[in-house]
Every structure is written in structure tokens, then in C-alpha cells.
Image (cartoon, rainbow, N blue to C red; front, side, top):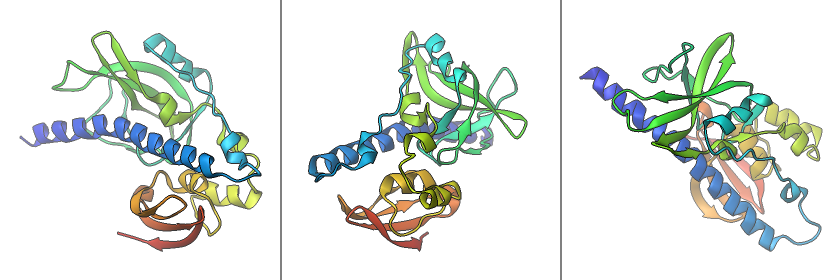
Length: 231
């Protein structure tokens, strides 16, 4: 019974994790588009950044992920699992991928989740601290592929994409720290994707799980005004 409960829980985590990453990123994109509509000249250079996309559509095209390093776009929302060279150990979560964590994908494989053979997982295999792991970038049902890697990963170093940001901002991001004056994209890079708190638009409060160290961040006019520990 315990193993059955574990299987059901991990299935839910795995299925929801990829879709949640996609939904959160889509929400963020909509916020950026809304901000663009109200942007007053001069244009914010962040809005001119156009990240490269691979647009994989099947297992063969997904192998292009292994041709260059990738960086995590939706930090602390992607679960990874041990990989033994042939199969993913779905019953033992290894951790969550950190914001803009650099990853070298070795290959992309399909794997069958226990008790759910009708839907295969598309898994990106990588090495961390000398051990092999895998995380889901999509699902396969029959001949139909749903791949979310473009929404989950950067194909280019974010440090280069946003090289117009000041050095001190990048130093805070690389330490996964937030300070007043940062914008939402910068906070996402430091803490991962936030969830709705209160307010909307440029004046709001978002909650960040932050890999188990939750924070509440209040924005005024699109900039961080207040940072508090939360539960």
C-alpha cells in the first residue's frame, strides 16, 4: 500500500511539475506583454531580449538539447530523479533544479512511469556531482509528443542575454539573493518563479517558495520595495 501511494504521489508531482512550469512561464510572459503595452519611452532593454528556442517536436529533434549547455528558466519548479543508465527512479526525488542552474544534457530518452504505461515521459538526462539524473521535459502518448523544454530552459547563458544588467545585480542573482530595486525578472532568476500574493501589475506582492526558504516580495512600480521571510 505504501509503495502504491508513493507511485500515485510521484505521478502527480511529475505530471504537474512540467505543466506547472509551463503555466508559470506563460503567466510571466503575459505579464511582460502587458507591461510592454504600458511602457513609456525609452523602452526597457529587458523587453528587447529574445531567447533562442529549439522547438523540438519528437525524440530525435529533442536530442538537440545535448548540443549545448542549457540554463533553468523556471527555478525550483522542476523535479529531477536518479537515473541508472537505463531507467529513471521515479520513486526517489533527488531535488529541484535551481534558478538559472547550468546543465549539460547528455541525452533525451523516453521512460515509462510505473503503473502508467500509456503515457511515456520524455526525460532529459544530465550529470550532477558525478551522478546521473533525469527530469521530465514532456510526455508522449502514442505518436503524439508534448514537449515543454523551450518554456523550461534557456538555450543561451542568461548572463549574456541580460548583459545590460549592472554587475551588482548579477552578483546578487548568482548568490540567489534579492535586494530592493530589482525587477521581477531579476528576482525570478534569483529565487525562481513566484506565486500570486496580492495586488497586480507593477504594484503587488508575490510569494517565492525559494527552494524551501520562502520569501514574500513586494513590488512598487515594478521594483522590489520590501522583502520578508514567509511560511
